[in-house]
Length: 293
Image (cartoon, rainbow, N blue to C red):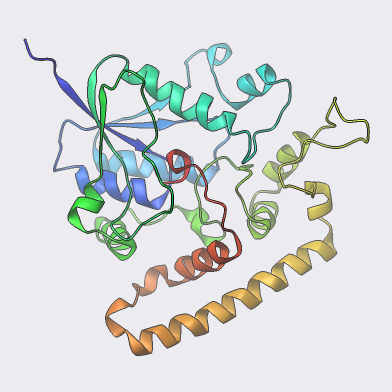
């Protein structure tokens, strides 16, 4: 008997994977949706996943979570095993232990198609499909690339479905843990203003490096602790820089629209798109695709 092939789509809580789930709902009715829960997501992410789950009409499997809290393999579980070493762009243990390995276990030895939300307008330098399984039983699928769906198409899918965007797009442009080290400085300020309790919890993770003789801290931001970032004068500086960049970007977008009217974005997403472009301009370090798509 031929082995049944599973159809799997991982959700990050971000716009692209969510739009892909909406796009594929009726195209592949047997699709399985999953979310690798770190236990440290934003409240807006959990709310959005519940909304998306209702639209899809089937449950989104939450990996890492167990009905018995003592059996959860969440972020704190792994942080203990790594002896307090915070993940960073150089040491991305969170992606490996909280995203990739749980997915490998979820699939097991089953044959599966894995649907990935890489858009047709994305041409990332050096991008390679993640090596999800050493068993070679998982085949990646890229529906957006195959069907020519770009960023504007993603926004249209979310708008027309009524799902919309997660509320965190008002101040943050990527999904992921509330203390994700890929956050830009302005997004840390956004966390402080939107969720001061979570900002304080993130500060508590910053502890002295036991191997340092100079009192160096394990910090989320390279070269700056959250205590330093949260000082009023530093917040004012970050905001001023971001506001100036946004105004410059708005002017550039307006000029582009005048010369290329067919490439304008839908008005409902203009603010989020402008913020995304501004922050992408100031940060050339790409986050883990499996976490932020």
